[in-house]
Length: 101
Image 1 (tube, rainbow, N blue to C red):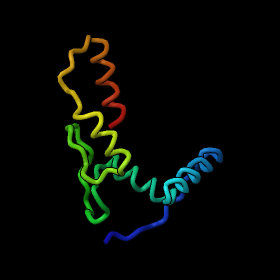
Image 2 (image 1 turned 90 degrees about the vertical axis):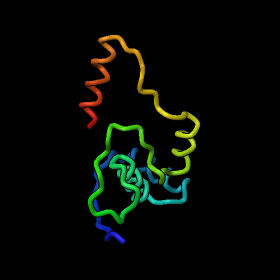
Image 3 (image 1 turned 180 degrees about the vertical axis):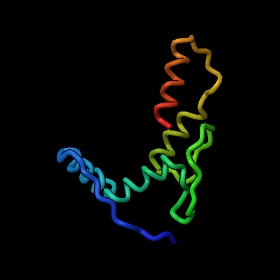
């Protein structure tokens, strides 16, 4: 099992309180929510892999999504990659991919 270490986050007070309420509603902790979020971003299935692969541009969906996220993915179905976009939209999509790598 991977060791855990402390991370200090600085958040707006209102956001911090909302995060605490969300965690309480879900029966978990803010730390666990943040950890799960980073796992999704990094496509890391669990804490046992010391060298997780970076997120890729493929349409693979992690197996260990939180239940609510899994429901949304299942409801939406696979992503469509063969869209016909005009040149401006294509340029915008490319810029967003680059920005959010």
